[in-house]
Image 1: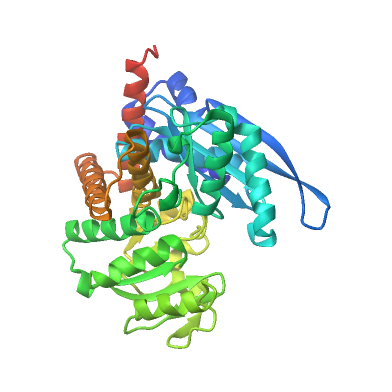
Image 2 (image 1 turned 120 degrees about the vertical axis):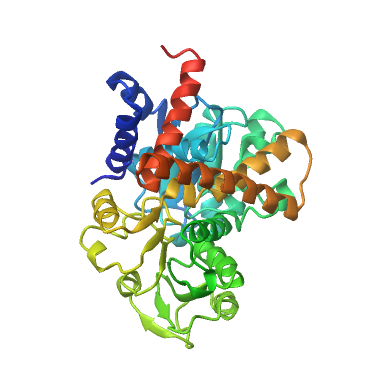
Length: 411
């Protein structure tokens, strides 16, 4: 099933509960605008090479559209459409005054030099600068991009429109970025794991965790979980997975990565296993925090974790989600579980609009407040309607977007 079709399936389940009309369903699932551009750049060797870039603006009923910019060789329009709609529901479920958007360029960033990536980014901004900005659509980092690319975006956008650091978030702190933005998504995953565990009547010290994907999200989640007495027994990246039944020394693993080009390859103080073996480990919590579609109907029967927290976007396919739900596995869905990043992006945008800087402690406190409130709302909806946490999150999000559209004049 394609990514956008999967997103629409979850939307339809929530719409059935809300009893939305067919016309409203079509309106809420159709993107407001889709932009596809060609990005020709000169490579370092003098050759000309063209890339395809996308920006999909899904919905602005609740405010300016918000969403990351992804550099990945598998980016296509369907993928970006799905992620844009996910952002609409994600910002709504945590009650940020935003709509949803997403962007991407079909490129393997590791194969380009820094100068080539900068030319690519600036040419992409040249092509779409007139459709995004601080009050319309605010990009942010995603897979394959980071603070460096956001600084280039800001600089290039301001050449056309003048000084406005709020035109993009996820910037370096020196470029009006927010303290705590880099850790935000992973920290949010860890915070929500703690909230969910408390609701289930379990204790961190008696809980084992496996994290599939040890990049920005997985590593920060592991750090917070380890500091909170969870026993993280396995982590993985593209080079392989590493397991230690007694629990990994997460600070040591992080130090190893810093000294090893940000890769786990060769880590000696654990047993090396495959990513598929990690997914099937006998642990309490499984956190898929890498890419989408890693838990499918084929490998879902082998999942032994009783809790799944979706650190990545769409890591569990709809067929696998249904299978796991029937087995009684508790799944904290991506639109809530990994909303820490967009939440701190919102804090950055607020600071930029006010020309006022918050400290790290305030950012962390505000993040905890927003995610706690969102989690309690979803948990309550799930319990009252006897539905999964995923469906509850979508019900809340879709209701908020539909209500905003009604109040704005949608008849």
